[in-house]
Image 1 (cartoon, rainbow, N blue to C red):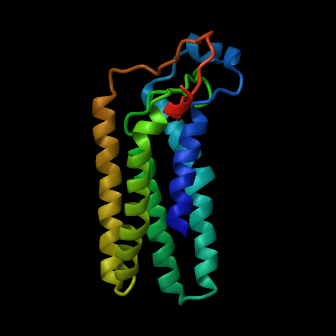
Image 2 (image 1 turned 90 degrees about the vertical axis):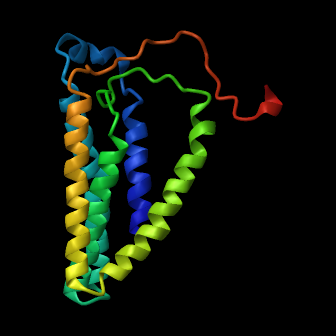
Length: 188
């Protein structure tokens, strides 16, 4: 259950960041453009504080009531590390300032990525939960999984810093036309 909550928290918050609260207020970001690194850092911090950390803390409190303390701590640490890894993957090509870019709904996004998100969710939930369950049987295996997760987080951050070094945050152009999602071909 905590992996599903983390998955939806990470991608839900990432989607929410693309919708501006007040588009006219982004003049500050246009005047003094933050770097992509600063935008990613702000997005990461928000996702971790609003999504990953509360689920990990809630899972820790839940498991402490049922399991021995070392097992509960290991399970919560695994949820936290996998949440951090998922956050890094979700922000791997992120170039937007949270809540400050115009949102243009893409009609093909939901159709083209639905299979990807569903497959990712199923793999993240079932395969990763099985690996975590097996890792909890041995403190050494748990620590190995945590070390591998932390190494992957660092590797993704390093790769992103290299790839997005020369890019600037994007501020999408406001479209004055009405856009529909056209999810069903029968209604088109």
